[in-house]
Image 1: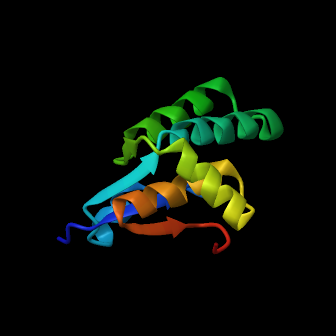
Image 2: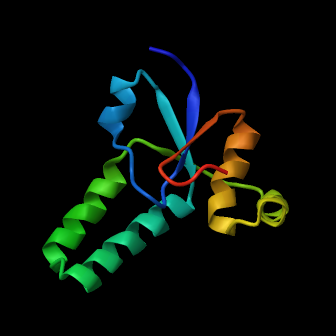
Length: 112
């Protein structure tokens, strides 16, 4: 297996831990905001689609089991990138992390 790292942009979809092994990726990293974005997505599903509390809790537990190392990101760099790319600070937190770790940025959203 390779030893490269990837950064994840989570706003569109999560990539499960099994996908990483299938792709021979050994480590995935993301800013801490990944957890909050995931929980917010679960809350949105619960409110809009009637996801019951047991299913919401199960989804959150699944989120907490993904094998992604959470890392701190420099706020100044996030702001610089957000101003440069005209994107949200949330998106640019992932970009700043990928940049600081010299790793690929994988996203399920639009390219930037």
